[in-house]
Amino acid sequence: MSVTDRDLNAAHAEVKAEIARTDTKTALLLAFVGAALAGTWTVARDLPLTVPAAAVGSLALALLVGAAGMLLRSVRPNLRGRHGFPLWATLTPDEIGDAVARDLAADIAGLSRLAISKFTCLRRAVDLTLTGGALLILAALLTAGGAQ
Image (cartoon, rainbow, N blue to C red; front, side, top):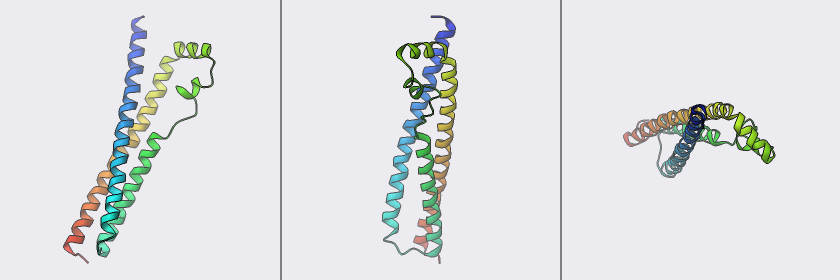
């Protein structure tokens, strides 16, 4: 195995590992956002909310729902078949060996673009979750303070 082949294999493994880490973070954040939405709904429906608290809380819930949408978009399967599994499903066993042998660099590039897309969605979802959480805290303070 040449140095170039070894480096390509290492880069390929690194990109695949980054996608796996991003998917794991996405799953954890999606579970957190779901729990935050459920918990907020459970608490808020039994409280007498003031108009400002209801407005801020509604905006917070909208941001959390937006975060959940971004997270789901991040893990949505890509079946266009440009690289990886979808492409391989259309090839014969001999063609798979040829495709892997000659297109490892192209696969690294495609997977890297996929990783960046997933990471960008995850980052935006984290930002929405943080903003929604801050607004939920503000809504709780408005409710506790009794602001009209």
